[in-house]
Length: 339
Ligand code: ASP
Ligand code: MG
Image (tube, rainbow, N blue to C red):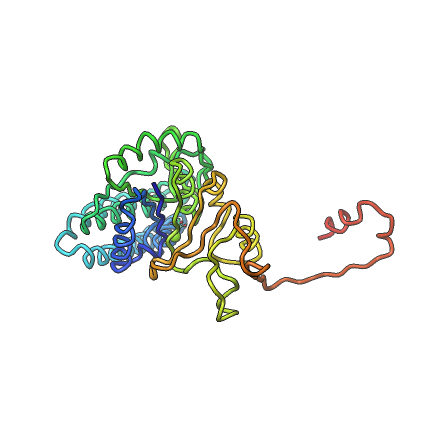
């Protein structure tokens, strides 16, 4: 079994859905579990709508939601053709609920963290439904599964912490029977729920984390993160035009690179999989043939001693020299206190 995660750009429009169906189709024999982010910039738009509502501007919130709804529906029209009305009906329900919530928030001029998560979760609820139907239309036995029944978290709304033990139990109860039937479960990343069933989110960009958690819970052979870059690179390609994609990198190296400015992903979100020895592959959904970069717990050293170079800009160095430092303890602490 494998986990395949598709980020926002990999589900952003009709051609992206087409590519997704092809990519998953090629892996059908490996029993994929598919995790999707919200389509394109949906989450940003939902955040914008909540912000308008919190300011009491219901009209602006509605406008943002209407634009998002019509943009989403034109993608569906393009992909689903004759079947579009059926898919659009589901989406209309999501947007009706969003409008009702926005109006309530606009009256109160404030939003409880739990309601905000509920609001934002519609992005992934929509994309998982859309992606499952898209695959079905292309002949794959895909079924949308509500990830909120599987990804159980605490009630730290907006930044909920997952409960790996409970997730493992639920994944075995809910996802395994689906894959055993030969079907492909499609779940939304980023969202989960408390044991009492309140919707939570894992924090922005949280779908990678969802994928790694599910990969770990299911003991997947690997997790694929399908994104819009070909993997981690030997240097920032905007600075070094002939930078190359790295084939294999250790988790520690990837973490360090991210810390020092490499932009591909937050390796910490991959930790649940890596810690269990499950490799994570970063791949480009626009160019699906190259193998991309594999992040593993231990990676053999490559042909050169240096795996990759990252840089951070806008950093000032302050050089402080004083004789009072000689033989003194606590000097650095005093210094940091000043800063
Ligand atoms: N859709 C969520 C976000 O934009 C989660 C994700 O994309 O990983 O933050
Ligand atoms: Mg996103």
